[in-house]
Length: 189
Image (cartoon, rainbow, N blue to C red; front, side, top):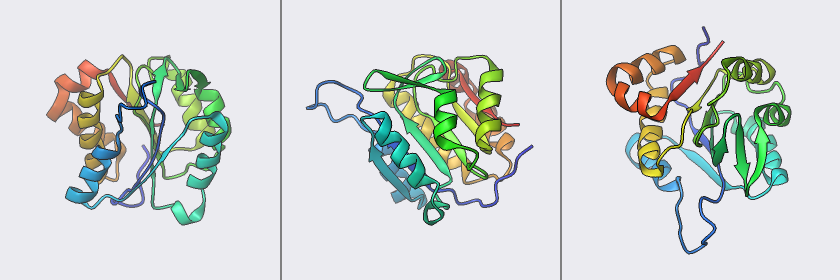
C-alpha cells in the first residue's frame, strides 16, 4: 500500500483540444477554478497540441519547483491504453518512457475516455516504470460534464486521505453508481 506524504495535493493539468471547432471552448479549467475557489487547491493548467509539447510539460512537472503539484491530470481524448493528442496516440508505455521513474509520491489521473480499459498488468507495468503513487481513470466513453464533476470529487478526496486506497473505498461507498457507470479504476501497487 502506498501512502502520500502530504494531504494537500495541488494539480498539474495538461489538456488537449476537445473539439475541432475552435469556437467551442470546452475546458476542464472551470472545474479546476471551482476547486481553487472552494477548496484552496492550486493548479497549473496548460494546453498540449503535440507529443513534443506533452513531453516538455511532463519534464517541467518533474522539476523540484513543482513538487507540490503532485496530481498530474491528463485531460485528453483517449482509447484503450492510450491518450490522443490531435488524434496522435500515445500509449501507456510511451508515456511511462516520457515520465521516467521520477513520479514518487505523485498521482496520475487520466481524465480521458477508455484509457484504463486495458489489462491491469499494463497499468501496473506503467506504475512500476514511473514509481507513481497511483494511476486512475476511466474504462469507457464518458460524458464531459459528468466526468468533470467526478474529477472534482476525486481531487477533493485526494486531499482527505494519505492512503490512496481510502480514496477509492470512499468513492465506492459514497458514489458507487457513478464509479460503476464511468468504469472508474484506481490502481496502486
